[in-house]
Image (tube, rainbow, N blue to C red; front, top):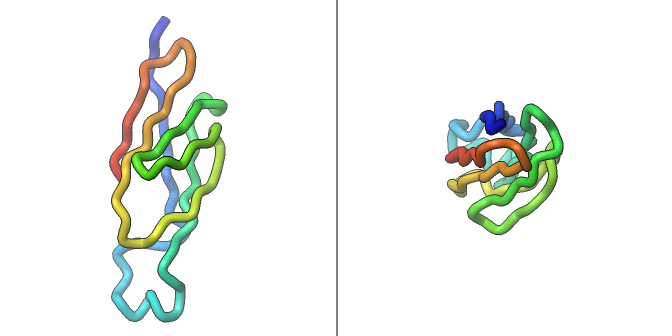
Length: 80
């Protein structure tokens, strides 16, 4: 039976902060990647791979997509 993932991406800091935030908070953010059920294989358009739940570091200005796959479930792609 194929079913859909519930996915969540949580930014460690808001990406819509003003330019001065770069000075005080740096140029990267931690992104937490989770799925329901956990244990999904993750691949990003930047080449990062992991198994959920996991955390990755990204440049604040980067846009990327995340693809979730797990046996018995339909693949899910999320734009970030």
